Length: 386
Image 1: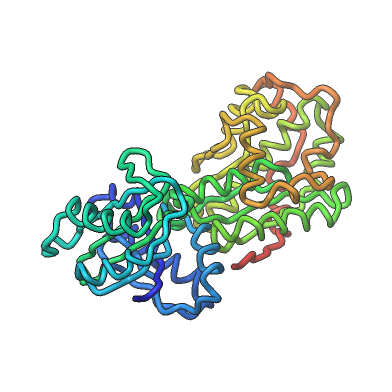
Image 2 (image 1 turned 30 degrees about the vertical axis):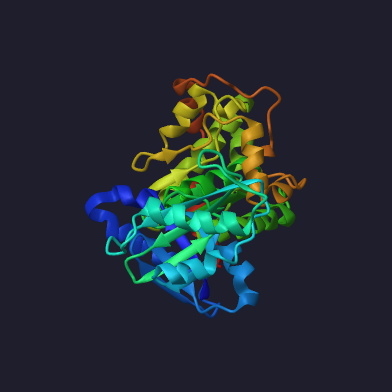
């Protein structure tokens, strides 16, 4: 009888002919994340299985698996050679600490002579005999004993399903460029798009000395926090001071924020394309601030001419976003009081319904290409690695 870890995945089963691509991608992601731990990882039909690990590493393995997109749940299980007697030996030792229980069997190996309900009934009777103070409740039990009879000649008994993040394996949907600020929203946006299979690069606009080196370090720290979910991140830090100074000096004050956002989108798309990204990702949330009205989003959208812009938080409220931020460990860093470049030269009354003709007149006052090329040529690249 060996203690092993069963790994389950769900949405991958819907992929038809592409199933093996997604399964293999998830397998490789798990193997990479666990590469520093001595263990055996293998595929069994419809499952992954981890065995031959040091018991002292068990909790560390579980903690890592709970951050891997694509896994639905995991269980610590007892593995035996398939036979009724071997399964019975494990189940005879079970102590039920709840008031009610049931036994649930999956018989993937159809050569096993007993049907699922028969095995559940017989094992349930034994457990009930050994635990006379509890009762059987097949509809709403407080405890469920799971038995899986698999095609590999092994059977597995376990009591708990530890929930994981679900989603799709990172990397199966391509790569996106995350506009990463120092706030609450953008790390959550990156997390959610990685949950749908995107690997990430990130771009940050830094306006030193108006924003401090601490503000830049805060963004690096946020990238380090989300990398355990998203995988390695290449962070592009764009010097943005000249652009903001030129806009502040030459353009209408109320259009400052919109013009800044249009520069960001333009630069982000150029850097994204150069680095093989197929989408931009922002943490924008409809009507949260002046630059996130429908009209403002429309005019900033125009600056990404070739790539789609994903806004996974567009309908979320701040409470929902903050909860996810807390759950992934980013919130305390996000709320540190180091402001990003969006707070530089912030007008008292930013326009909420920008007009394209006024935007055009303001942008004619700027040497856009020169400013953009200068910013891109001076980008700092930081590799954030697991």
